[in-house]
Length: 485
Image (cartoon, rainbow, N blue to C red; front, side):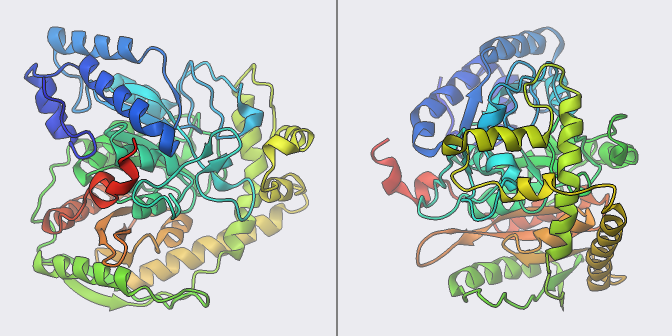
């Protein structure tokens, strides 16, 4: 049996092998475990593996033989970011203080993937506490998991906080991974590691059983190598959750995702806004990235899209940061209240444990945790509500003004629109746009559209990917780093 190239194979290709009996799910899982054993010690994407993964695969093979596949992801391995509950595995968010936090049940999105027949391979490393532990900590670093590296160039950031999920799918450690985003944590790693990352509309996907930062912006989403694979994975996890009020309106849009048929002609006649943002004061020009962005824009035009230049103001994060700090501690405390036997019961407990074990746990301090725990939530509630309303209005009004009445979506270089989409709760997707001519570093492109248009956004992204098929594996882009592995 010939094993496909795990760093480039698509779910559709794997599904064909499984359905024809050319490969079993057990063999597919064994191939991915071998890929992990070979490459992950150098890159640190994996936090832990499920001990029953071969049993899961055997069950999938049996169900396929006896009843047929339950979904398009039947028997396909999935890795899950380690701030999402998987029964039998610790949920640590990379924190030493949470090394023994052991939830007894799956998060609803994990249960949904199991019901669809996916094999839950294990957990991925991440920036500690989803990058809301402190300031100036490297993306992909955690006191428990160490440092995730970017296989396209180990000298640059893997970006985060879903660093391990991006690295894993880029290296072929799994064909599908799940990340989470509060602001940029799916889309920025996708930009830096040449994959597809989608942050769905806030409320499309349940957040129950996910260690949070802020309910006003948190969501999980797919991280894959192709838009089609992202669409399949999002369809599997989308839908209402009675325990998460934000998902109350998700049923119709989730149904559209399950019925979605991707069309490579979807860009024909689409009107798209090209965002021309002013560079940050300390931002250096990058002609190499600009050239990749220009080539992707040209592909949009050639595929039939009508491009219109639009402007957005500078995206100040002061109000957003205040909102995240206010929501952080109460959200974490509610998460722990649902887990009966974890040694940590609050964000304050994590803070105290870290202080007591600072040598191991606090290489970069815990600035965000300290700020969040110190908030008097009763006294500051009115100020928080005003700040959140102002921040939401700022993001939403500016996005709506940029779109006007005729534009379907906005396009940004790299993941530079992540804060706009995150603060407004709108869907966004990043896909590969090319590689720098002088260093082959990955360059992505982001599309952002109105709430609950996730299916249409996937259509547009798929058509762009078809018109501009530039993704290459890290083994092609950065061969030197693999010669010793």
